[in-house]
Image (tube, rainbow, N blue to C red; front, top):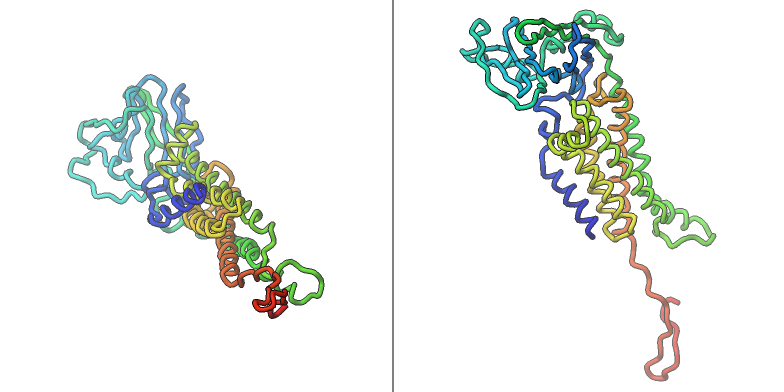
Length: 387
């Protein structure tokens, strides 16, 4: 019962909470994109200075272990960020502070946003690491570049980009990178495979009905009509485990792609940004363990956990099916495969478990064992009616 309560609590809590961007890495971290942002070099190279693209290229991350101050320049070469040994500071007069607050760059600039004014610094963090949306490194328009519009199925370079840096206010560096178009896959094809796989798993819920039908059409000795095959429940539990593990692996991948590394930071990122996919994935595993004990509510636990993991860990990441770049550190194909497994396993297990519950509700009660009945007057045994 404890395992069932755990599964139901996690799954029920997930159902009660709206699927919001709160589980993403940042407030507007994309679930996928068709543009790949790559940092190719910091020129000239500086020991202890690292810059990389994170969150599927939505942000740049700069880590400063040089022991000096590294300054990021804004769009008009004004002082924008200072990454000092004691933390990150932002210039409140830089328009980039406000334009870079969102991925789209939509912002109303306050009167103080004047790049010609001397910088006024305010501390943003106490560690020498900063992540920011830099609109020089990704595509800003809703329409593709002309070259992409002319050949959307061909991978191609959109542009090379540069973000200027300054060390100790004197030495100038450049972060150089590339922006490429990655043609999106066929979303219809991926959804077709997901539906086919889910239906195949859900078909397991009809095994009991099919055995009953077969037993009515044969004269050979057959199992009791309506009794489900004993291997079906372990099979559904195994599929639930696969779906739950895939959900957790994809969530971990998103946090690694967001720039988190090390057990502690990844775990913290999961709780902060991937809580519902992780909880529903664990709920699917917990429901599978409970189902293996063959408790009366096993099918209900599998159905509830399957629905939750399919929605909150699968459908919520379905943008992977229609975007060329998936926010995981692996290939886009593997990321899409994980999402497909989550949806197919969760929906299939939920469907099969629901069918099994319906069959159990329709199955007549087992007949009582026949036993001799004694005649009340003579005391001699008599055969019951219908024997």
